[in-house]
Length: 315
Image (cartoon, rainbow, N blue to C red; front, side):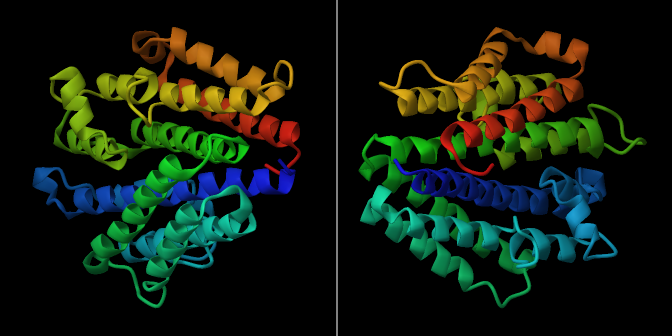
């Protein structure tokens, strides 16, 4: 496959995954911030969403105060934010158009329709009133694309570059979400295990569509170490770090099939996957969850660079 098509498919996977994650993040944050303080409402929720999205610095270059309205607009519809949802869908569509010969017509039609549906919101100011309609459009479009791609695309290089980009982005999002919650969000005057702490961890599970899965797996009240265990080590959970790296290794193996033994990307992905498969949550908490997640995010970044170098396109 030409490297230009490969890079378009890889980044299409990343942008679609990022748009979906941001949509879920906005929806879950709105739920948390809407609660009164006496029932777990969180005055830091929107600043936390900005931190999870890795957009604190870029936001502060444009806005003086991190207000709810400004953050909603910046993460959702702001054309000045390269990673806003509307820009992610736009870039995914542009990549899809450039890589159309590697996709099916059915998959293209879904991403094109999602683009038109999201563009319908482009002249609006995003608010809690319009947010649910906006996130429903985004999440429906992403789900339809995933379904069409899964059902109609050949399991050739095009499919596996798409999966590779999506899994790499998904792993990064999950790690950053966990790290921001554990390291930054709980105010100093709030008790660990208190009402606010509980609702923040619940919000994390909602953000990755894992609240039901948590109760099914653990049959217990929400506890930080169990949430982390689910989202780091449980390979049955599609957004867990282990599950993402299983997909990454599988994709790289398929892309290397018949070429004779891998390269730097396979080596890096294999090392991270092995560390995840031999790890446990007790060891992680003993050495520091923040330190573990920081090291993982760095390793994920190194993998992105290795993929770019091995396949001949920009990271």
